[in-house]
Image (cartoon, rainbow, N blue to C red; front, top):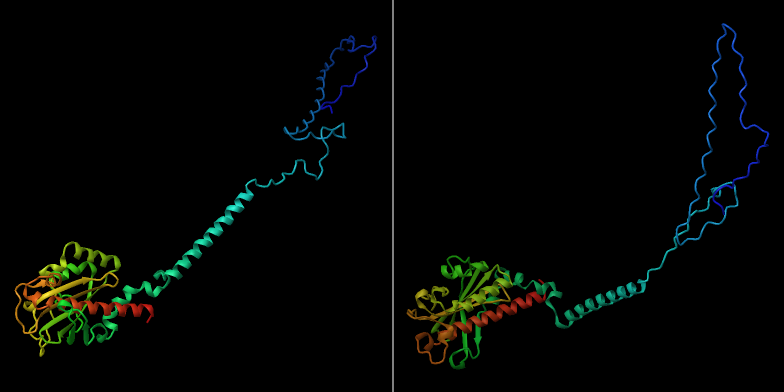
Length: 343
């Protein structure tokens, strides 16, 4: 299709025809006449505007079909579209994406199922809120558990005496629950300050022969497991449990064989920082007759084989450790029972 209009031939003028107008002589104007002013020649008609160029198809697209209207550069406008519709192209990676999504779902379900199975098989404490609340439960035992539960009236010490001898102790007095200041030695109280001493419970026992007396105590703290572990490590690394200036105080019971049991009568002692509960357990023993002890020993040294000191020979190291161990076991049992069944 031609994009311009054909030029039609124009017939030539006859040879005799003039192509210009001859100039005729103009007679002179009469006297007094107003000369005529010639009119300016008329402006030639404006050339018609050129028609717009027809749109060209982009490379790679088919050319527009020839127009059925030769007098026009393009077809008349119609409602139909003048461009090609874009057809959606399917993603080449669609199967891969679907497979990846399915794999993620399967993996997630596997991890959740594995975690649930592990908690069921191992009895993970994280699965039971009551088990996670062990410290909170233990911290409140000092005011919501009967005194006979924490300090039983009698204690049996099978094999707890020197040479594996059986021992038995009877409670002769329980101190009112008290604060930490005034109950604990100031230096010991300062050592326990990082865990926040809350309350101190104490009771005094006498052995079956009424020759030794022992005060056992529970120090309830505000600490969590990490703080208790840190304190325990410090006692172990710095041998704090063997320092005589950190020895716990006694609880004398008036009107009993422990009436004269004071600081000067202390013979052997133990301090144990628990890590599963926010409690420090201590015990200190002495002679029931009120005699003074000039060289007290911690239980490890008083129970050492071949020790010849007065606390070692009288078995006071075994007394302090035996009573402290049984009070500690009872505390653990009570905490376990109360956390297993929420109160």
